[in-house]
Length: 191
Image 1 (tube, helix red, strand yellow):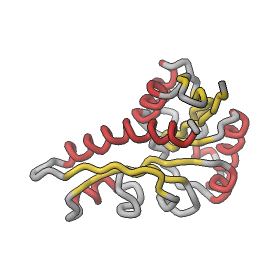
Image 2 (image 1 turned 180 degrees about the horizontal axis):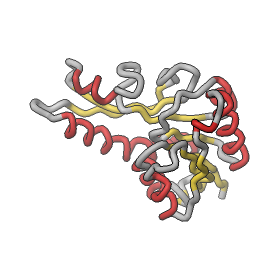
Image 3 (image 1 turned 30 degrees about the vertical axis):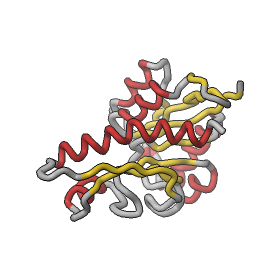
Image 4 (image 1 turned 180 degrees about the vertical axis):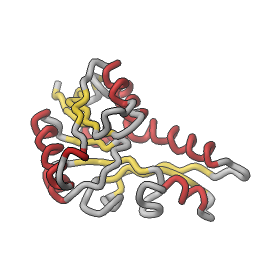
């Protein structure tokens, strides 16, 4: 059985990391077994570090504040990813704008909480919620030099209900994320 390795990068709670670990890590699919080869975080107090430990994985901490510029940080990210043998990098709540050095040296996908190409950037959930659109949704896309601008791989949406609060809207977004991101990783690797 072919083993395909992924690296998961995160910055915060690690809820999407946890779904990847629960639904994919160490599991066998039709053509391969998928393993999380490394977890990388840029914030030492991120809750996701503890979630990775529950699955027996140590997180490599690479704090961006310890580097003089974005490219130096990205070079260290790429070095650790290459060393792990990961063939796919998954950005699961990794809150960093990546340089061309990163995007040209690794194949990466990102989970974004809006229907791209609308509502790019960190305020996507609020902007989508406050928009006149009748639906909200999420996207998984390839990472390129443009912020949230890579080729869209998969999307899911839901109908905005009348009177829906921002909290309810955000919860619906996260529910979709927990299903779509693991499914998309499997679709990419299990061929």
